[in-house]
Amino acid sequence: MKFIAADIEDFRSKVSEELQRGSRFAGLMGISLEGADRLLTAVTVSSAGEYSLIESTADRGSYPSLTDIVPSSDWYEKKLAKQYGIYATTYRTGKGILPDNDNIAKSSLSVGGDGLFTLHYGPVRSGVVESIEYELHTPGEDIPFMVVHPGYKHRNVESHLVGISADSAVRKVERVEGVASVAHALAFSSAVESLAGVTVPYEAWMLRIIHAELERIADHLKVAVLLAEAAGLAVAYSRFSYELELIQQLRGTLCGNRFSRGVVVPGGVIAPLIPSNDAISRVAHIRDLVYGDASEAMSTPSFVDRIRHAGKLPAGLATDWGAVGVLARGSTSGTDTRSFESVPYAQPYRDAGYKGERSSQGCDALARQQVRWEEVWDSFSIIETALDVLDGYGGKKVRKVWRAPVPDCSGMSLGVFEAPQGECLYLVRMLDGKLAGCAIRSASFQNLQLFPLIFGGDIFTDFAFNEASMEISAAGASL
Image 1 (cartoon, one colour):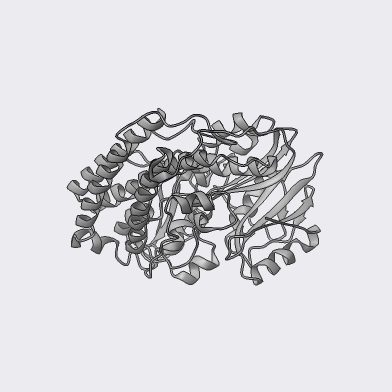
Image 2: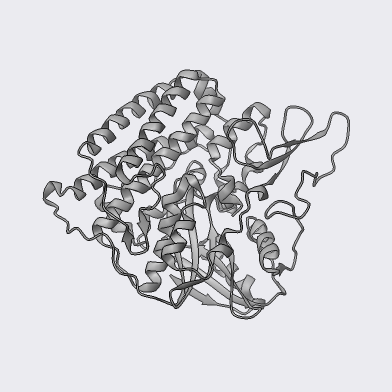
């Protein structure tokens, strides 16, 4: 990890230099320092997976905006303005990134002409759906313009982490996004472990990987459930829902919690697997069920035709906006942090059989679903191998040490993990073993900005497919 110090006047130029070297913009974060100062940090990552932190100290003033060189920095600048009172020089007011006092549905664009109207879709909708508002401007069927307001789920998570220990904080961060509990706990713990100079025991990494990949399978299956429901395929919907339930039950069997909470802690894991002699056979059984139903769905014209050409995200657009996760890999653009040599879980993942990132030559909802299925098959294989390693099969005996001690530490570090939705980042500042600041960047916050851009010529009936295929968590997008 590289730290680059910059005066506030040079902050923009330093970011631009990193981007010109081929790095990807990964986030703009703020952390409180002593007094009125705030540490402004831009995160970039090279194609080789090396992260850079460009840091500048700012009081409650302004800094040079990045929006003209990094379009996706817009939301970050709005968040910094509301959270810390640090304004970009071209700051534009915007509703919904964080809640306003009058956070109600109001149009942010005037539309006129015969047949043109504004539709506020959400924040409360039918079914069990997170609170998020889509402000649609349409002449009837096409959706030429849209504004997204995710602020209804804001819980001020980052401020609640300040002043507590890392062990207490990890229980909070794994509840930031229910669909990515393990990923958030791993990203946070990795930052703390880096600061404390801790090496996580090998077998603890194997157990972490098992739960992380079960979480990935569960989330990818959830997308399949939503797509099947939107397409009106009752049998596929029921089958994928059943298989998702089997995965959740297996997670509960292995740790006592259907969301794998309470497993990951700084330094390793809290305890070994709950004994389950049939874990490997159960994984194989679920894999065979999913494979059969996925093959059937992907050869069903009424399903494939609904997601083909829907939600197109060209590779150039994905790159310009810094898309992450399946959204990027489904547009031939983007990486998977599990393949980075710089991350502490690189070797354990290779030992568990990780084969590298998956991508598609397409750029639509179909391409994204194809990437998800490939990742599901990889995840099943990784889990089976990791379970074998933990059982000592194949001559690979491992000592049973589950957690390394984490001494009190001070400083700042970045933790990274590949959540099912994409790259999850935690910028953590510690002071004598307590959190002095924490900035979180979920994949959903980065990707949700692209949602209005993927519609193109799509119409209202494509909305459900586009939303499901992007797999956006409103909770993660509005911390």
